[in-house]
Image: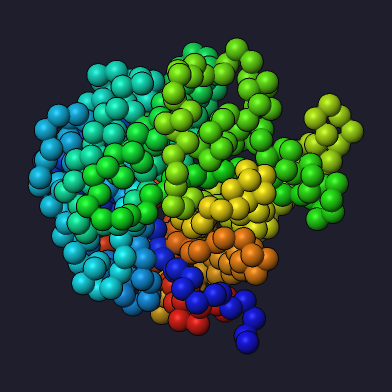
Length: 457
Ligand code: FCB
């Protein structure tokens, strides 16, 4: 048997998100999302870029599905834009917006590609920002559940793999952060850490209510997942003392203790609550039960990690700063720690105690400084290096028996990378934005070979 072979049935895919690729911001009765407003505000997004046109996927989806066929993926993760479906955030459903997703999903299915739909990937309706400040209000969770009901009742005959919400930390903690300049959309800075935690609590509630809505409305048995970018602690050595430290540190690393813990275990991590003190969010009776819904899978987005070692201090561990010159890809935060793939998966099973829960890598990838050469090719060997190391780490998790079931590369194509605009390219397909030409990169061919052989090549 060749090395790095994945088990039969391992699912290979690619991922995108609505605001990052669709464009057509004003087509089909869509109204603005918070990202339209944020990117239209001078100084918010690099080079003044907006998602107004992006990859024009709204009009070119058939060409993009052909690209998927060429790649050989059988699974595609995309997101549905709330402001296309319910342009005012609550109230009337816009069937023209629904129709776009019907066309897309039908095209995918005709080509034997299973759609995995994320119901929220950050582009919430601006109308709800104006009405009550988006995630600052508990009402947002209930409006989200109504939107989910509208989507699943119209698309549930075609889609049976649902993902509720993408990366709660990013649009809450980065969105409302007290100390980040400039914050992520919608750009409202709240005045206390408690209020920031309240926004993520509301998002968790939205996830729970959405799970219930999907299960109630879906006409057929379906799969429901949450997508989280848990912060991964990687032991500096794989020796028992540092592994123990990494497990302990997992509770307080990033926002883990207040997001993935309640979602998967039904309780905020006590270690985090102790650390937060008066800044812990207000939790109403019944909230934790609502949040802790049965899931069919966890979507795990993984790009990097944090090294940890055992320490002779009160908590027994310490987070390690990276040395100057530590290798990273083309983002300030994209430090290369391929072991974070393996350790993230292992923490879900062991530290969160959810060895029963199937895991999908719903995003993994990197930005590179891609250039089209004189032959018209993009030879992104750095991306291949990054992806290969991460897939090997995923393979290790599978071979040790952890329940990793599939992998979606981020991303099918270059796209609007939020506050970094079009300057940062994460695709395995190069987009020449002025002409909208799609140029598969060397990493595209490499990934196709992995898929074809069901192994790391
Ligand atoms: C993730 C986001 C995704 C993309 C990648 C690079 O945090 O979910 O939309 O921006 O990072």
